Amino acid sequence: MVKTAFVLGAGLGTRLRPLTVNCPKPLLPVRGRPMVEHVFERLADSGVRRLIVNTHHAAERWAQAFPGGEWRGLPLLFRHEPRLLGTAGGLKNAADLIGGGDFVLHSGDVVTDLPLEKLLAAHASHAAEVTLALRDSATKTIGIDADGVVRQVGGGADSDLAWYDYANIAIISPCFLQRIPDTQPRELAAVWRGMTGGGALRGVVINSGEWHNVGTPEEYEKLNQP
Image (spheres, rainbow, N blue to C red):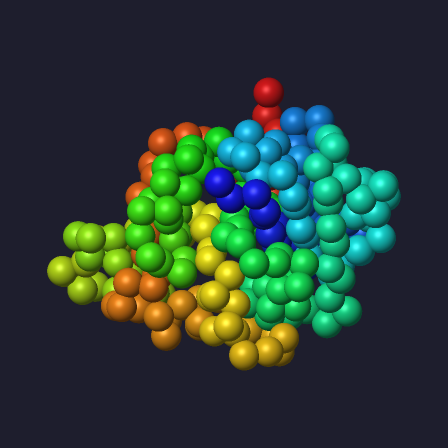
């Protein structure tokens, strides 16, 4: 059972300005509560018992939203980034908080009821360092073979691969953090490109469930409709 989750909360949310001028995007209200609480709830329902969030823009708002360092009785830890480190640099910067077990990586601006149990089971059944949740989409970013091994990251037209979009959720083994050399700003996609083909990076297709990546004012407004 995966007990720890790392939630990406340090982005600038520039496409949702002016709503995000003084508020981190994951703290914007969705259906009557902060967007990230929907993430926390889904993670808790899947067995997560410890939450870690990286912060950068308007970091004081996180402490205001979650005083006491907990959410519904679960420990909630923050790791601030004075300089934005990107998805990979942010992970490396919080390695001491993450500890030695497998953990869930989840974007703080993805609202979903995607069944994480399928992702957890897929990761447990292979010796992968990273297992990505993938979905059918017009955006084709991840190419996998018939065994679920990621062969290409970043899009392409290889007819031997099945192409999907990364759902911004993954299960990661702690050994993967050794592949990130330092806390310099860098993105996970760049690290994952160096892992393709060998089985260390895998994907599982999960098309069931509601899934919203809140990236534009139109998407945000749609998500808040009754």
